[in-house]
Length: 304
Image (tube, rainbow, N blue to C red):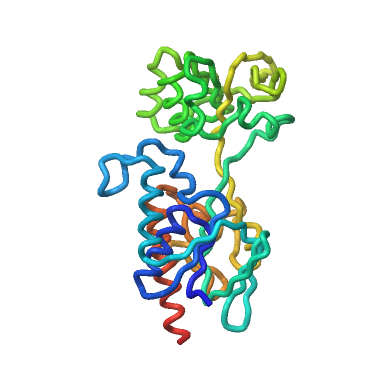
């Protein structure tokens, strides 16, 4: 019987495990992919206190080492269900494992939103990417497109502009929504161009590899853009549906919980980007992790 089972190994989940262990309780972190979450896609983290600059991967590795040193346990499996019992919870996974815990912290994070176009899934890794940090080097000296106009898309484009011959930013709105300073830095680069008011309507491929995209303007005109790579940065989607019976979801699928990280189910807490919030940053994720873990430890003490 664990004191806290944390579902998700991103910044919020790892911080929850750290605070659980520091409070004399035993935590198990169950992660289905890799520890670190979205921050591992950031090559330079420059707004986290205590570090002038650190890569997201390095931050994740150091934090994982820290929680393991504190005694937290980890498992790489996919959680299928969390079922409340009389005085505890049963967590089961797709792999067939079963664990029991006095409390649960849901730190499920988010995933990248796709374009939803025919053939998109087949072209992932063959020209389509959702992470310039991961795949940008493959397109050095080549032409790429970036879909999106928010901060994430502009940051992707900025990184790619340092490697690629030509970067074309495709935004469906009439203007980008990213920070003005970021736009200023990006669009003064000679190898970056911006097309606004356009939708990507189709993908072009040859022999299983991306060769270009079709875009349509608001006036109905269409054009084809040749490119070797397409980087999609149009938002994130929470993966909370499996836990809707435990915690209320808002209209966008995020957990409807405030900074206290509470849910409608006593003993279940939420933390990180999966929760509705105005700011999604590394700092706010770790803050949630601390809050949720302390709330879980308090709940256990009050039940004793």
